[in-house]
Image (cartoon, rainbow, N blue to C red; front, top):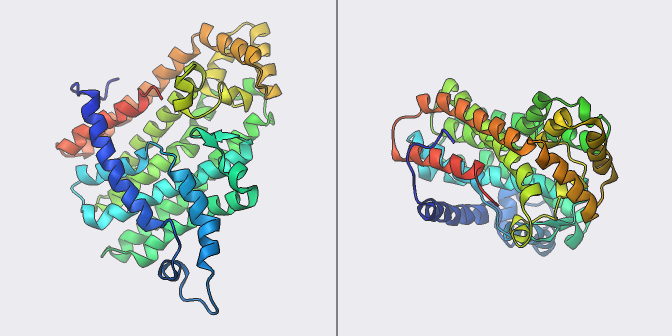
Length: 368
């Protein structure tokens, strides 16, 4: 892919990412401790008029959330945040706690998404609503949308009111966008709009809202908190959005090409997107190219929400034979390459800028 300027051994990049992930884990535990304390709850909501039951708060929020967080995850959004701060010469110490914000929100969206989709598995284990109940999962997932807001009130880290208002406006705007994306995704996989009526542009916009939004939030927050001007903030936001869209397209590809023992690492059942009736770029490209009979077979399978391996195999075979995977990959690469051309102009030459390019390549070319 065109964003890479020099080869770097995979183990070197992965060592770097692991070191960043270790830092992110510490930040996450500070943002949401594994056990609620009175001091922490006071920080979130002020001293109680009567009294707290911190044990039940732990059981209702911290325990299920940390069960979920402890399953792993790439943590790529907060790592993207830290790389952009470094590339812009921002203050790591002042900004570091804000890296937790987007990761907590991201996990909240997954918890709620699994409930909406009726997903049984996530990251190799039962979905949170299956383990802890729908009521607890909904509340814990929604709590992750709001707990990060405490940063704007209680952890200002010396930022001016103007900077914090800009950051808050980014947060609120992107939270609206992620729900717009989810609304489109739900409507499409419920069959409320015919799959063959959904265009490539509409699909990419859905991804920009749903997956691109949190990447864009991460980049724009990092830029604002690093003192960047509006042009730089917006350029880096568009770049991160394109990375998020490409990440989603690659995720769609991996859903149908990952088989056998590799499936366990992928963390979702075989052909999960087809079972859920997801309208992906792969489906859209296939419907454009397949003869009517095969196109109808694919549409029928999507509408059935089946887990029958024979039907899933047949649908995947149709997608693969009509070159949808290659076409979708070309679109993803073109989006990232184009947006990087703009982003590289606003970033000064430095090691963090080089690592950012390598990191993006790693994300959109990953195999799991």
